[in-house]
Image (cartoon, rainbow, N blue to C red; front, side, top):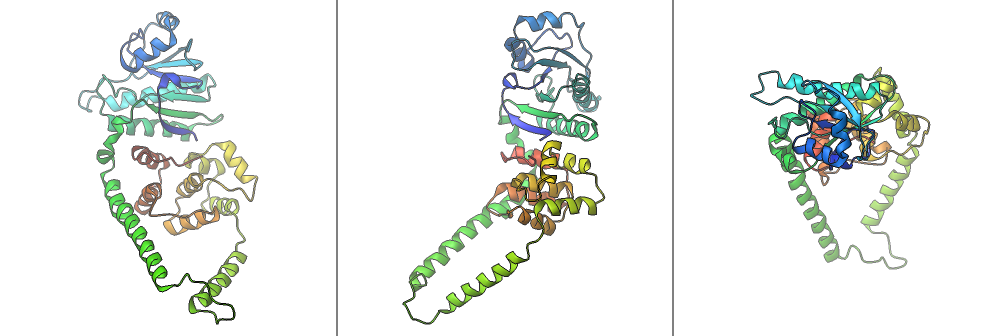
Length: 343
């Protein structure tokens, strides 16, 4: 998955490079900066002394020393005033400059903290949106070797802002998940109780004529056999057909789906490939399929939407709203502690 949102300590990330939200002097500080210097050891500070500092929005690289990563990319974010002094432009530049430097050095895995969201005062909800937008934009535009980028959050506390970030999603979940889930469970319990009371589960004596329910079951079985016999298109075949129908290239599709090229090649090469539900939905989002076609694509992979799944309800909300940006959907899923779309 090219862009991953994770909760972790960035100094523990085993990647090619981690990004340090640094001071302009590059000589260490508090927060993430201090934690990275402490974990890397004094050698990091010694190398930083040779770099002559760094301007805001730019990036410089050092070795990782005692960190589990090979390199540290140092970038200096904006100090937030009121949002009207070019803060967003500088913040976007931090992400793009860091990624450009990583690409130039041939790095494949990079982990970012949420830049400027600590002592520099950038509102965390806005900082998250800028980070996701800047990173996903870079990845979609990138040519050649692919890169996997992790956006690392040390504590889940900032993202208890989900009501602020996605109030409309909260409302949709309340309307379509909680009530529906309760009603469905209650309905199943009532049906089971009724059948038990009426003896519908009792075995039919030998030689007795089939009951109406038995006849209905036989009819349903016959219908199921007929439907199974009509299955002639696999998930892979449907995916490739939809890509052609949309006039997309393979690369356009798997990048929009937040899927890496290796997995896409594996799917393309196996007509009977069974993807995860998150992968199947990611492709449906990339292809901008309406809800009925998304349901069909899920069925080809052996899945279905469920009102008892908060993950499903959130994805369904975005499809109904016509928002097919997989990175924005993942931002919402992350805020609600759900798994992400993609591989």
